[in-house]
Image (cartoon, rainbow, N blue to C red; front, side, top):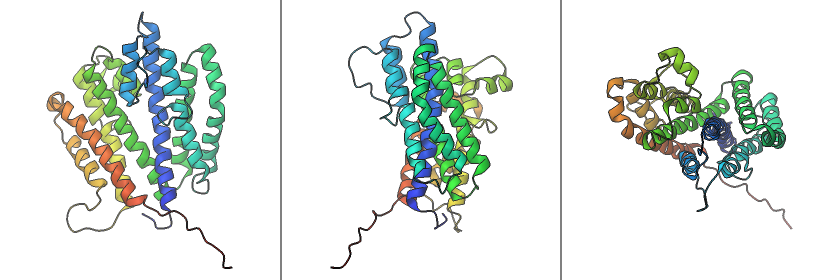
Length: 314
């Protein structure tokens, strides 16, 4: 890593990428889930709402029956929770405020405008439905990452931003696939594809028949789809390789790159015919890999001391 990029700045960029991607992924999932619950009789049940909380790894914090109103507050509108869309976007904006000299002015303006517009979007959603709010978040997240690609130098600062986005994306796809396996009647394959932003791309590639094996293969192994797991892991590995390009005689000495590269290689050379049988173990390994990589990145790049409190003599 470039020594001129401070650990504090690198950490902020990494988590900014994760927070914006988390808001985008959560918006996609909640949008299709809530649309499905509102469109089916009795679909706003406690069980359906708890399933959505479980996918995102958020505790409901209540034993009372859940409804769509509670889901929208806890997972969408709660500004104080980084697990909610509003909280994630506000967290990204708070971090970006301290690194405005590193990101482009367009990126900062995008996050700042988005944060200020959330209250108005919530009012509109209360009148017209949550889709208004969720679509706005998806569009702003896409704009932010598009601006990052087109207005930032693709240096170490950009790499940490993309690294955070890639690991968050891989983790969310694993959560969705695990949810589909544990509750097949609750989360259909078309719903899963829409939640991953993959429905139209899948249709263009494989046609309208959403066969389970084909869907899992597409979301995990497709090299050309930017939201697939193998694409996200390859991007993360490339960022890590560029951040630590030091020569080694044998193996890989980067504890973050090693698990990412190992799993990416396994997926690259996986036999699609054997994927259904291997899927449970692969998804468990994927989640473990994301955790290991994130912890190793923090240990290697984000260790810094608190500022020294200087005192004057006398």
